Amino acid sequence: MLAESINNLGKTVGAGLATIALVGAGMGAGVVFGALILGTARNPQAKDDLFRLAILGFALTEAIGLLGLMMAFLILFR
Image (cartoon, rainbow, N blue to C red; front, side, top):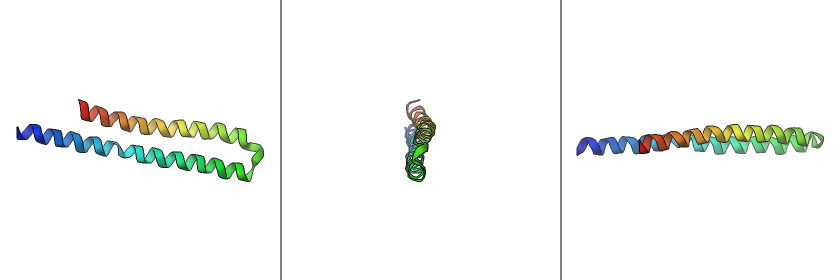
């Protein structure tokens, strides 16, 4: 009984710690699009190139966040 309770506690804490990656993904998305706005304001002619790079950066940043979320679910439900 006590060992099962401690195991559940460990899973819950581990899953909560794994979701910290979502905070980093949110901050990363803000940095990517903030840089897009600043770059477009400095050089409006390069808007299309900057937008393509920003979408790539956003996709890679969100992939890391989704990996963290997947790890949290694996820890919690396995």
